[in-house]
Length: 174
Image (cartoon, rainbow, N blue to C red; front, side, top):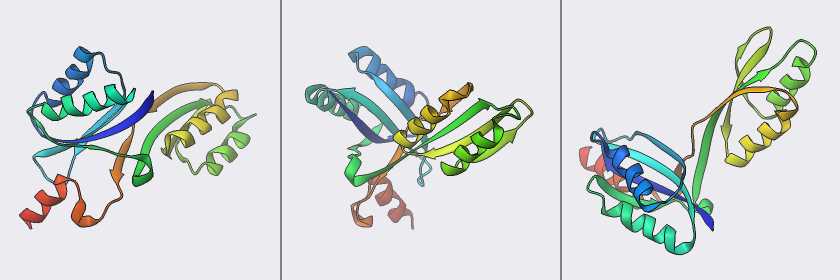
């Protein structure tokens, strides 16, 4: 079993995310995280999916997703050739007695302090999954009130001319 990060470029149409997640549900594939957002091309959406399986299952996932009507291109983002980031918002109980120590941890992890109240603080942390997991482990001695994680976003580190299809659409419009 291994994790795989799949990035899709899809037509920006109503229900496309539902059709993709429906395929995973029908086939019994697991989605660990899924993110979707606009690209530099107005009619294309970038979807990043993290999934787990053995080699046969992961190969089937790629093939099945690639057959969907709205999917323009499918790419695996291999860890050594890609950059991944995740955003996490964390609300932590922080009274006067432990606030200074907690703020030192926040500073050490380069978190952004978004809100501070007499009983809690909210921080934003952007980074790799392991960095976020490490921060959450470290502050677990405090009471974590809420956590919101976006899921993984990523881009491949290749040459400009070898870019995803989005690059070819952008160059044609110029």
